[in-house]
Picture 1 (cartoon, rainbow, N blue to C red):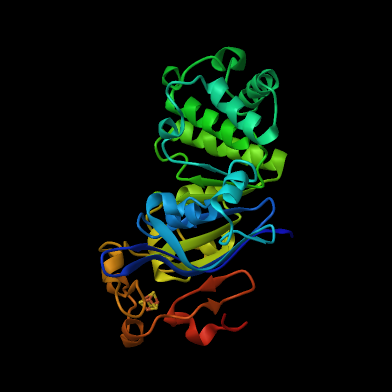
Picture 2: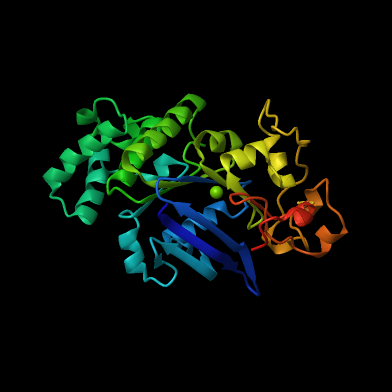
Length: 330
Ligand code: SF4
Ligand code: MG
């Protein structure tokens, strides 16, 4: 499979008065063409920081890439200028956010907002762009697109606005769509419709998706592969089957336990995660999860776990599996 994205040892941070807080610490993952990777974890785990770094938008939220590499279709992004990144954004990589209203401009019609992107990135005339905007609104399932194209965001429901945001994101046929909690602000029925829409657009267009979510139910519906983040690190990574049928990391097991009626294939014992994610300024020693982990032992408090390959597709960062490493460590 063609690799769209290769992330290696990506460390992102924020400067404070006297030191640097690392929001992600040496995270690595790959994404293939046409694949959906869900990044799951609680808020504050570094999911959004990771996506902003890929988009080249981290500095607008006060952060910096401290170290590591982001390769998009073989090209290194971390050394590109803002102008080069602007050209990639909205053209080859698009992003949609949690709150559709904050992504839309209230003073322009939805047609104008879709057309603007087409005029900038595809060099279309206004007339061509408006015709294409109607087509895109039809594609994202907005009823009566010829009428909707002339409406303002406040005239549409939240779910319709998110469809418009998706239309804008898809206008330039991106290779990669990053969706950060795209349905969290919507009610459950609309949420399901939007996820269904993303899936069907993906199969039509063949784009890759990074879906960021705190919701394991959403991940189970959408993901080919899942990366579980905790306190700025990836603690477990695997196919949707690896993660749901054989969750290895105690944090993943705790997240799964938040799904009503969930049982693992192997009958792994599940428990509710107590406590909360640590502040970046007060990260625990050793394994960052140890204060909340029911299996923590002395080694966990002293040493950060290494990444252990449980199979070709499944990796974990937990000392419980140190003797089970078959393929070796990376
Ligand atoms: Fe728990 Fe130790 Fe594994 Fe961390 S390394 S998740 S503390 S058992
Ligand atoms: Mg977030």
